[in-house]
Every structure is written in C-alpha cells, then in structure tokens.
Length: 256
Image (cartoon, rainbow, N blue to C red; front, side, top):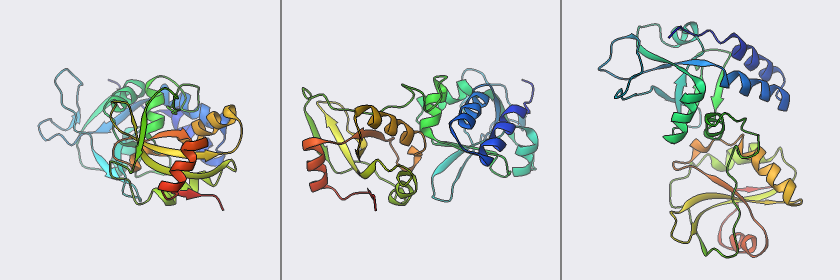
C-alpha cells in the first residue's frame, strides 16, 4: 500500500489546535475517516519495513502511556512523523483509518495517539474510536451510548466492580467544569436483570430530557474511557435513583 501523507488531516489538526469548535471538530473527523495511518508493530517475528496485512497475522501494536498513565496505541500520519519518534527501522502496517477504528472498537482497545513525537497530533479517545468505526462523528446521534432505565427492568447498584483510575476525579473536574448543567457525578456498577455488570458514570444534570441527552453525548465525546479498564457508560440520574446514589456513593465530581 502506498505510504500516506495525510495533508488534509494534518491541516485539520492544525486548525483545531487554533480554534476548537463544532465546525473544526467536524472537519477533523471527516479528515480522519478519509485518512490512512501508519502503525508500528512490536511483533518480533516479522521483518522491518511495511508488513502486508493478511489473514492469520497477529498484530502486536506498539503502545505507550500518556501523562495520566493511560495506555495509548501509537499511530502516525506519515513516515516523517514515524521516524521522528523512532529513527531505527521497525515493522509497521499501513491501514485505512475507518476499518482500523472498527477493529480497535471491537477489541475494546485503548486510546489512539497520533504523532506522539511531533507537534501536530493528539489523542483519539475510545468513544471517538467507537463512533468513527461506524463512520460517524462522535457528536452525531447514535454515535455514543447513553443509558436510561426502564421501570420494568430490575436493577441493582453496587460499588465499582473493576479498577477505576485515581486520575478520574481530576479529569472529570476539568471536563465537567465546562458544562454549567452538570451538578455532580457518581461512579458505580449497574446490574440489569442477568446482564453483566456495567461500570456507569451517573450524572446529575439540570434541564429537560432533550438537554440532558445532548449534554451526555457531548461529555461522552471528550471523556477518554481508557481511564477505566472495562469501558464506561454514561447515564442521567434523577428521582429515587439519584437520591439512592447520593446517599450510597461519594461524588467523583461536584460543581462549585
């Protein structure tokens, strides 16, 4: 496969860094969906250079960690960006971004980091990967999952059943502080009938149902679910459920 240069994607990233708004994000997501990326491999059984993707090839994608300790899969827009990070020859694959996002979403892979050693790049969260794998913008309807409870379904709420990053409260403060409608947030495990427990971020919001859904989707598009090990669903809290959660669990975010 021909090596990419991703001129349009690099231009979209530059513009987003200057002005982050819905229009520039939409342009970035369009550029991502039309891009082809280079991913270095940690496989020891393949030669250096471009590796053809074929059935049976077990991909061992190179990973790193961000400043919060969250795992990142490394991807690059062009060979110059790859060699800026690692000048020694190494194996790599070249793959269109949308099928890559689909594969990563199915594998519940961590965040993707574009051009880790360069000035033009950034992190792509699991929520963004999930939506882009469907060919959608992360802020589009049906691009992310938000949960509500049917009164006919039996539910139990218990403490989190999986590890949660200690950086979560700090990150939520940075994110939720942008939304005046977010009053508080709580993390717990939600058990619905006989389904597996789901790690849930319950959010106490002001506004009507339409506003709540919009805010949840916006929040989901910027929270990196890699800060937890098993994924994270968002859910509005209200009525008796809100009262119960507030009595049983400490807030991981509280508006000031």
